[in-house]
Amino acid sequence: MGGFDFDTIVRTAPYLFKVGLAFTLKLTLLSTAGAVVLGTLLAMMRLSSNRLLSGVAGAYVNLMRALPLILIIFWFYFLVPYIVGWIIRAGAPVAVGGFTSALITFILFEAAYFCEIMRAGIQSIPRGQAGAGYALGLNYWQVMRYIVLPQAFRNMTPLLLTQMIVLFQDTSLVYVLSLTDFLGAANNIAQRDGRLVEMFVFAAAVYFLISYAASRLVKMLERRIAIAR
Amino acid sequence: MIEFKNVSKWYGSFQVLKRCSTSIATGEVVVVCGPSGSGKSTLIKTANALEPFQEGEIRINGVSVGDPATNLPRLRSQIGMVFQHFELFPHLSVMRNLALAQVKVLGRRQSEANERGRALLERVGLSAHMDKYPGQLSGGQQQRVAIARALAMDPVAMLFDEPTSALDPEMVNEVLDVMVDLAKEGMTMMVVTHEMGFARKVADRVVFMDEGAIVEDCSKDEFFGRPDQRSDRARQFLSKILSH
Image (cartoon, rainbow over all chains, first blue to last red; front, side):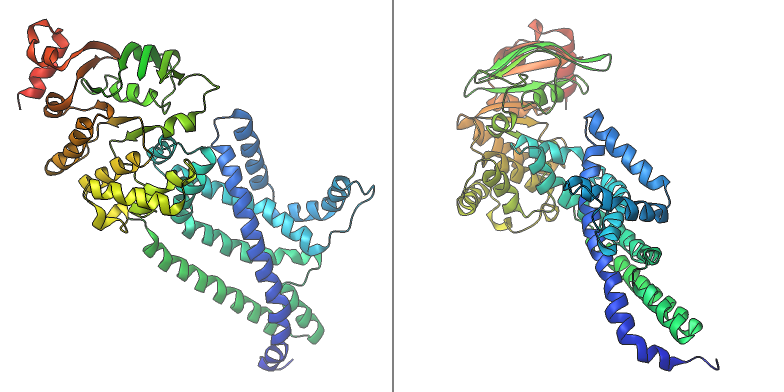
């Protein structure tokens, strides 16, 4: 095999980044967006005085957090076609494609974690804030949308971004669905060219750089974001 | 305009309001006072349903507050409320604080809401600060903005829940001045406060509460002028408050 072959990396970089990393980033960003929305709704349910709503949300969050992610990935990969088929009454499983399946899985799974972050965020806003909103005649949804959630998001941005970095790393698990994310692409080259060391070291370096740079950014943001009260 | 009839409220087995009855007529200024923990803040918050109550009835212009069929947001939009801790929205500029509910609740156009906001900031002497954020203002300024925010909804009555007790002493008067002006203009006001100077100056009636019950409900002159006719608790309270 000889020495460390940088040339393999240079040669395959366009493939690794344009196909692999693009997929990873797309999955990360879309999953985060979906999971933040779903997680916020779950958090509002969990904090609801309606026992049914908070019970359902609580059970969902606890279930998702008690199962290994990879199990859920398998689960949804095999189940989603049936569910979609049932919803649109196709009478047979519908092929939804690996990406859609993975996206739905990550949204549903990560929503449980984002729910807990948003719950803490909502609870960090003094109750008087909501009270002031209600006193002005705003309804529950308006109080949430204009008063509580903007402040909660702002307070929780560092944690939300940190969770997103975790999600970025977790997306590599889609290899079990034979999807070509960044790690999958690196693995393909490694196997094809017999350059396992180069590819896995390079993949590790890229994951590290992105995650580390992102977490440094979060740290900087954290210092600047605090709302003056 | 605001009528309390035998209002009772419990936290678990602890009764915080005991059959409270009183009323506030249009244009009247009623000061509610009493030792801390006597239920005065709780009582004022039941008036716009920020605090639920279990028994009795509260009517505002004939509309029952406790009735599940009542459109609470609509009712609340007609009653201004000022809080002890201001509760300005820290993520919005002063102007946006004033305009938000005008636009979202009353359906005013943004320009119209801003116009009204500007006029009210002028009135409380803070037009120079309309683009600042609440955190950049002093306590007294924040509370004046909060009063302007409530007035921007053109309320028929105003509720004040200890509006000066979180303020540094030197800022109390700038807030009281605004409230005195409001009272003189004929605003219907229910004010929970320990500021007996304010009560003497503008109150029509004084309600004294102790341990969740309304102990005294009489005119200002009777309350301050005839101490011999007051209950022991009210006399003790007054002697403590007025002696300094």
